[in-house]
Length: 227
Image (cartoon, rainbow, N blue to C red):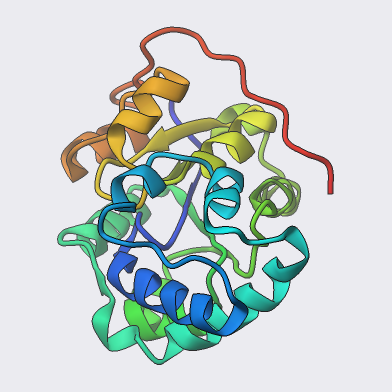
């Protein structure tokens, strides 16, 4: 399939922000009184959903907005530790040059994306939607489809978290996971029968419709909780 619109997550998909995220999350744990992620817990935490992670760390839902605000501010002081994954800038330039409409849909801030990607790269994204809530990717993607007048069947979302897959599939969008982000590849394989892209060359082929999104078998998207 040739996509009319390709949307990318930011953290863990375009840029390597996991060390900064982990540092800021553990800082927030000290302030808000929830459990830090230890080295021993890391693999488990990278294999479960956002809701499951909250339960594991002891984060009540009512604290999420305040924790999110604090972490967004903290990450802005860590941008020198965040870099685009090698080859990502060239991939974005190539897709843009091929006439593909590009978007970013992220929980992070425009300020962080600008600091890390720079104005030139960020300007290649026609649509930029930031500040999605923990379970708000679906609503940002829905807004993107509406504003861009793109049928969901002609749109692809590229991300690195289980919640990204949930959001895209709830709207009938194709989803491509990447193997280099926050969620471990085996979590996508086990929970979605989805085989993540392992190289930028492979991701480019999927984005251009030269290769299909890799599924082990058809999967029905799980229902999202209402909010």
